[in-house]
Length: 80
Image 1 (cartoon, rainbow, N blue to C red):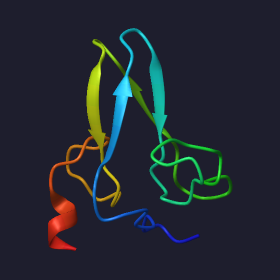
Image 2: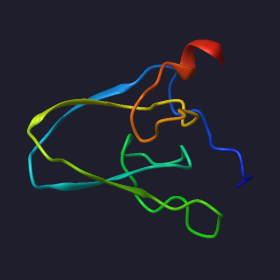
Image 3: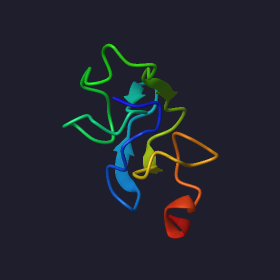
């Protein structure tokens, strides 16, 4: 695995998060449980990113893995 994340998809993942819960966002792009980590990064320089939900609401997690506001989408996918 390289130091460049795999593009899981060129659009965000919409997820209904629950207040008080923690989510572990996949940063490598290899997880089969996108947008969340399944351990596929093992042996690489990648590590999951913790997201703590402060309220129950829909969140748009980055699918291209290149967002400047990770783990949420900032529209970067439109430029790649």
